[in-house]
Image 1 (cartoon, helix red, strand yellow):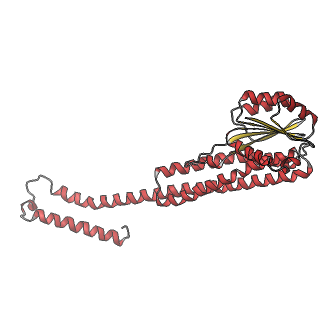
Image 2: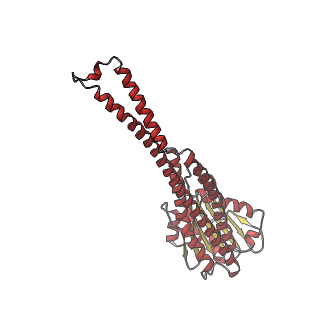
Image 3: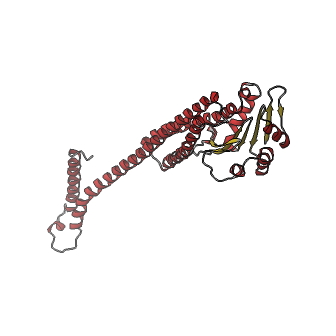
Length: 327
């Protein structure tokens, strides 16, 4: 889907512009133009970015490249090219697998161009709907609109972190009460999800720091404080993800400790059984020999006496184990 809206300083809003109109508006430097490419194919993306704006080929290639792109800020003569990553709360399933999506944003003198797919589309669509009923999002200029878009992307991280925190608490209890192999897979899923989250959050922190502190002509001084607010949000998300990582590592240690204790209890029980049967096996082995001259073999009560001996040995060893608190 390709959507575009142009808000001039005076006059009616215009939507669904063609590439020639987009190019003319971008060159004029007047009003505010937002072009949103949502789940668009490569041909559509290249057509708008090259025909409508004539962005640098490297930036266009980053938008259509399916490989992982780290969050970054590229500074061109007439615009900023920003790459971040978005995630949606519903993308966290029972196994805590995070499905993030790359989000691309071009910020110019009078325009904002966004290229989004997958999880990154939700925040863009929500903000687009809010623009239809609230002019404040467009009256402050393209840099403030870029702030609103990036802020919506960051806010989407909070439900994800809350869901991961809920699952980590649940796993923490199960690691003691019910440490099953399925629980281990769940802990590993949480761990991988949080590591993936930290991998994309760390460079986004540098992105927001650069937008809030560098002397960038596309961001006005009065709106730079909003990008500092974005930096604070990223720092908070990073701190929460670090706390979750430590919690999951503790859960894994608890699981392994619980399993080790259970194994020790099993080995202890087997060792006690083996220790009890050792003297019984010795007695049975002695009287199981086929020597001819064994006086006890002629006893009429020998069989019963053997069982009495067995009972005395077992009773004595159990009392000894209890006295030593091995039972």
